[in-house]
Length: 356
Ligand code: A2P
Image 1 (cartoon, rainbow, N blue to C red):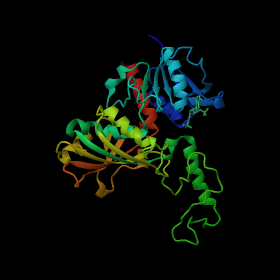
Image 2 (image 1 turned 180 degrees about the vertical axis):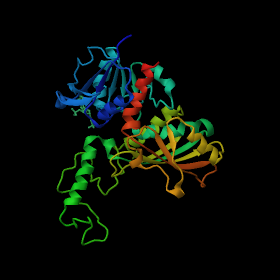
Image 3 (image 1 turned 30 degrees about the vertical axis):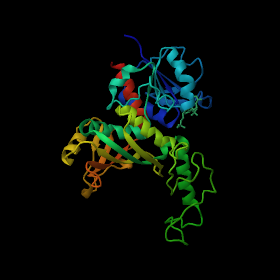
């Protein structure tokens, strides 16, 4: 049998290291892995599959040795430069960046939603944006059954989605607050104010965000576009349309970074063309692949970021009728943005490629 070789590009990053963890859990029939990162990490050791792997610097010749698959999680510019080189050497790339997602000849795949697209690849398969993945997993079965007319997304996104530097900003913000001498060291509450209005980030430099993320919400993810939306919002709109194969679907989005380490939460408002029974709709979600319904609010059962962390499923709750329209619902969706939103989704795609 042919030996399978896989390259992990960006192996030292948050998504890359999570990919290693997921690969260990899945133990796919792979003969060899090679881990790549920037020159900064070359020579660094990463523990994987019970042994130490030496991280290699990614360069123009990295794919000459012949890889079957590569998982890229090293940002858009690295993907743009090196994914075409990998493909030219016969490797199929599953790319976590936004570099190729909207290219017409690049499938944008969530295995629970549109696995049939995988075979249409010309060497690159794009992994959607993390906030899009966890939205379309429950939206697809609802679209099939009730035909979606309009979606309103409001997201509450964790700092892990901004990479290592995002996590560092929140961590530094918390440490700075706890060590600030103008605050009561035991309770953390200011002597001067009943409600701490903590704004002081003068003791540390922000690595990622434009403003402190600790004790704050930033209505700004990725760059601003001329139309007033952010690129993250535009990604959610365009990628949802592409994955659901509904190019004219009405969608609007507001994406917000919040001081949570991991797992994105989303409020999704959906209007349908067709009528529905709420019980039947909830049962449809319960039977949908990759969805776990956690919906018993009176008993305090609803999806939470701290519970979703470390899981690959998408957790759905607070499912209720939107009484302001003829046929609509609101629901709350939480998923691990680094696992299902990136690493696990990419590995599920690789798994399907291996088993095809
Ligand atoms: P490195 O750790 O050597 O900088 P994150 O999003 O968590 O910050 O991780 C980004 C990942 O992408 C890291 O593994 C990082 O490696 C990698 N990376 C960034 N730039 C390059 C590059 N030019 N070539 C290869 N890997 C890169």
